[in-house]
Length: 231
Image 1 (cartoon, rainbow, N blue to C red):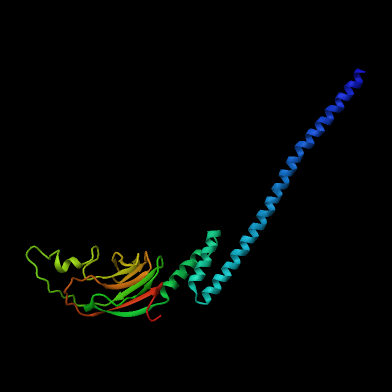
Image 2: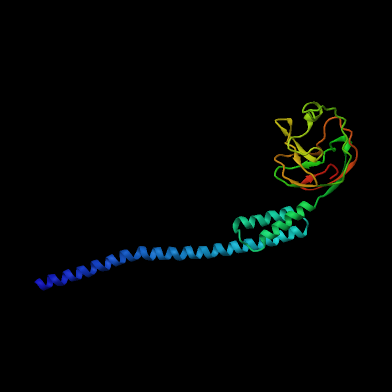
């Protein structure tokens, strides 16, 4: 009788162990299955990403060939947002930036006697403009002074701070709450690449005192993100 009970106890023990193994193995099998599913999804995601990058690069190439450099660059920037280290993309964006800055160029003269040109064109917030200038002029100013030096009032007070006297400079006139707002003057000199902080009208002129009698003409070329009145 004791042996019979012992046999049953052993059988119950084996049954208990078997049930425990089954119960433990189900989560392990489920976890293994989930890991397999995640790996498969990762493979699918990588294939989709690679396909998207290839197609985006092809669209960027077609935009560039069509002369729409801005849209071409936008497509390449989308690629960078997905994967930063795609070979050649950074160099292509640099080339497109140069094409953008070299295209849409316009030449005009500035009459030094007038100080400021007519509006150079419309600029957009965050969109870079390149300005190049060349030439010389006669700086003539009939300003009376004393042994104390040039006055800081009257004519000289109209000079822009931080800009060399006589230098070519620019400002952007925008709108704020329906009223004109003038930006801080920025130095142009022979060349400047300027990114406006607001949409507005670009004005180009010289940092000269009021009442000056300077003469001459300067040649200016603007390019990049700017819309001239004749465009």
